[in-house]
Length: 427
Ligand code: URA
Image (cartoon, rainbow, N blue to C red; front, side):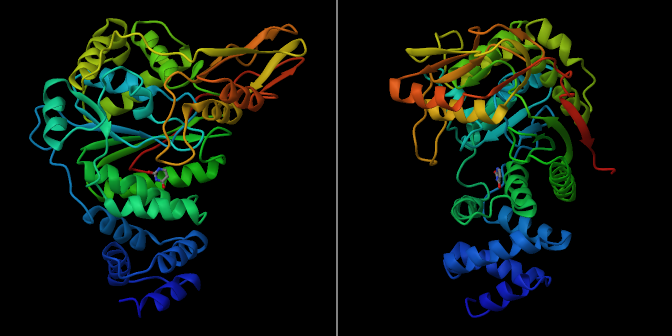
């Protein structure tokens, strides 16, 4: 095979179209070890610049799915629907959404990865709960879906295993930001997971992977088309990620805020987004229920407790908070015109809540509490952020990242809407 690899790379480099059998040979050859890392790196770079046609992308994604196992979720007594977020700062929505949608009668198999870079990972957040276990067997996933209705756990290594190697290679060859490569990476894992329906929360803005609205829309359309062509009812909601979601950014601190929302309080943006996403998920599987009611009456909180206990955690345990803390204050009076999500995400990461390499540990107690929002009046010396870390070195790094994160002016425009376009199959 490796003799054909240079020709395949050259054709993609020159803007040509690859045949299904060439894609299959190349990816399978890579999986077996017959195609070298440098050959795959070159093809990834060619795809980065030249893209993949719809036909090429379909075969590329199929081959990734077929490189591993598919979870068998059919035969459950409830319809299955999952949500995937492309990653945002303070995005703790899954912790509330999965039990909420389960309380309304669906089964939510949320098989997740860990956070890398400035956007946090759901598993890292949940691991701040004493005793909670991220790794479940396929039988345990199925059993928990049947009995509790919601599972958030680590995606097993058997799902689309080529993606692990490709993602690591993309990371070191600067080929992550390619729409066909991102779409096939996300969707191969979600399709292999076996969910019947999928809602994609595609974040757009300063704190998101996709800063540009048109690219986010193209990503959403590409992923919806891929899901639908593989028999998964798929919809995407574009949501704004210029400012952090809610007030808490970190691990345990985000679990606390999620519990506030599950108990009927918490920030409005977190609650409103959760309910809006829940409505889409329920609609995708034909369940006629009002999620706002299931949140307000404590049903979602009850399912959350069951979900955490089923994975060995204590939902009522005290959650850690870094022992070292510092208030970042306003240096001048005025009106908050923006809070920079990217700066806050980077600060949380540097405080220890995130990782630079996938094997790095994360701190449960590190994080940022955002005390102001756009439109608030502040005086000089008034706290803008409360910052937590496990040691002084991390504390200083996080505090430095927050200088200039809040813009203060004379007046502020109202915040842009959180919910942007919806992309459905029919478009
Ligand atoms: N998340 C993934 O799983 N894959 C990508 O390529 C980007 C984000």
